[in-house]
Length: 442
View 1: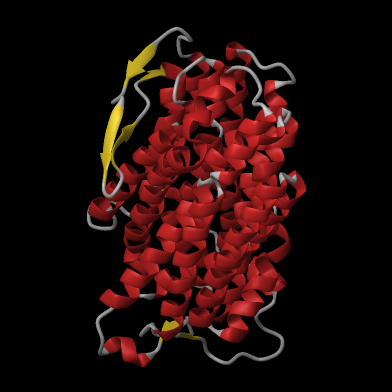
View 2: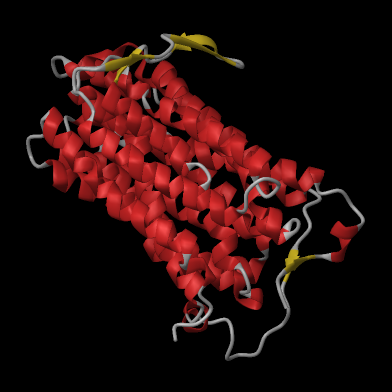
């Protein structure tokens, strides 16, 4: 028997649960894509080398490797609803940890905060993704996750802009010039306090809201002691290959979203610290297309195939684009609450193609999840934990890209380094065409 939503959902609208879950996806996106702005912030604050700066992403995403399976067991024990509330509460506590890290200017404390935030996000991902999949028919699961993804990726548009305005302030442009003085570093560290206090307060109130919200619980059939193991789950090829596909997808997503700023900086582009917003804008566009097209026009499988092919084409474009060519984007953008804020202006063509990978990547997460969970039934909780481990791809993708660039990256070598995207998209294409259909290793 498959995991199902309790009978109360058959008589009540799913609108309220979906709205609450959508807010969780927004919080996930906001906190995750803050990494793109934290990198230049910490690089200036601590005068980090490129290898040291890579630890900022590595410590965040590597947490998944150690906590994905325990998270699945934890969620199974406390329930999906309590699991979501507890993980959000943990995110609140972790947000407060960034404040003493900044005030004391101890880089190790930031890494601890990043690792702890990664653990909290792992628990939330383990609970919220299968929750969305099960809040309706399996064939429309990708469309539902796409709706959630709009909020998630729109948060990715706002987060770099908000962080740059509220925390970096006038320091963002200084990253390409002389090192900051200690007085300037102290001022920059002080700028972090109020935004993170506000973030912690908001997340804490939301955690309480989840605890008492009318969210239906996902119930699973009781199972005997020999079932529900990792070994049993991995006996399903569509899941095992799905974990690999998700790992590679997160690798290319983080490369496109979090390395685009440094890539633009190598071209001498201005406003490089908010380039992540461009990638996220394309991802939001892709999610919107997914809502309208899946499954009414194209299936989840076909959407994943098209996305992988587009990723392959864009990778070739990144490598062979004219390094002197630019494309004009708006210099300002108007956002709710924030009003008119500075955007990017002219963008090097190769950087623009990297941002377009956001469009190619947009539908992959919501397509891979239901394909990998298909037919898992009572193994859904364990399978979700294994899939969440794929988020560790965000730790290794940028690392492999950095190794490909070498110690002293030039524009040409950086463009060539993005060939690391090719094998990732090729495997995702294989999964879309064949891997997800496999029900036996024989």
